[in-house]
Length: 379
Ligand code: ADP
Ligand code: DAR
Image 1 (cartoon, rainbow, N blue to C red):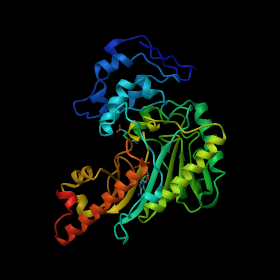
Image 2 (cartoon, rainbow, N blue to C red):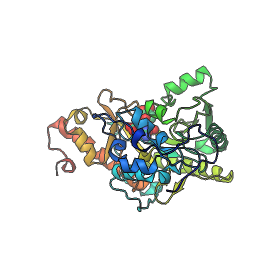
Image 3 (cartoon, helix red, strand yellow):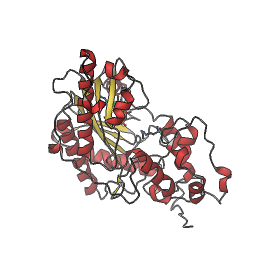
Image 4 (spheres, rainbow, N blue to C red):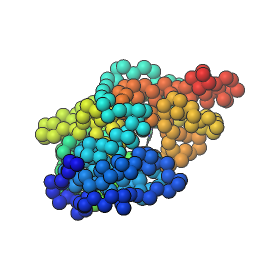
């Protein structure tokens, strides 16, 4: 068995000698995580003593799903190498979550906003706001669950240096979580920009270590372009505005990503990416594009319909609450976004969101008028 020894004492715990199944985790009957489904005894025995170059072990990768039996996935990567060192587990979880995406498949990116057709809500009667985000991580500096304190500081230094060079409609201000003024904090909360300390899933994954050090938020002067630094990923690059002009939002995001990438490359670094997994993220659900294009949309009758979740599945949409992942909807307003991230391009995913939300708005109108539902839902 190939042994992967860490190159530095970045993590106190080594994988240790083979303990066999003595350390195999317990899963509740109620758990339906992809980790429970795909951490077979054989995969566990293959991976239990492996360690990535930065010292990340299988135990680190599965801890979140062991602590949180209600996880949907339950598995995180601590560095890019986690995806190959623990491939028996990650490959199975990725193939399951991303519609049969195989270890031999190749991901293709397309950030050309001019290819988008239509907007979800031209009349502006249903969609309150639209947001498109991607994650990005800098190659060689780890991922949030396994990153060292020194590398997390390096990430903030590199990213803030890049952000401070943004020009035109992207120019703005960075606010460090550890040192922002109370007035700035209150404004960021009021704007719904301030991310909170990672949830219990990220806590167990090790992503919250040293909080709030090296964490912060950038936003442009118009508050339509944001970058979260060292939250679940090293960067969450976000473009958002009121209304549903997804093309304008996507175009700004594409320019922003390119501008940040240019500065990162000028500093001698690059985004973590490979042909198979696209852009590398800490959670396997985000690999590929890392893109979630979402609308906050008023669909009280559609949302209350017993077939709402089935319709979202059919349209390849993911419903969320309006205060972020794991939150509930509020007053018939839902966060609807593309569910897929990997194996489809950014243009395809944004178009999926546009087309799917158009269908659900048509369904809302039909339910109000007592007319037949759109054929996309009934065929
Ligand atoms: P992420 O999209 O980063 O994976 P969340 O679902 O937790 O994570 O959303 C992060 C934040 O972005 C939450 O505060 C959520 O309310 C906000 N948000 C998401 N989509 C929209 C949108 N279309 N309009 C306004 N805010 C949004
Ligand atoms: N809550 C974790 C992660 C699911 C995907 N969402 C992310 N990466 N924010 C779970 O396993 O349910």
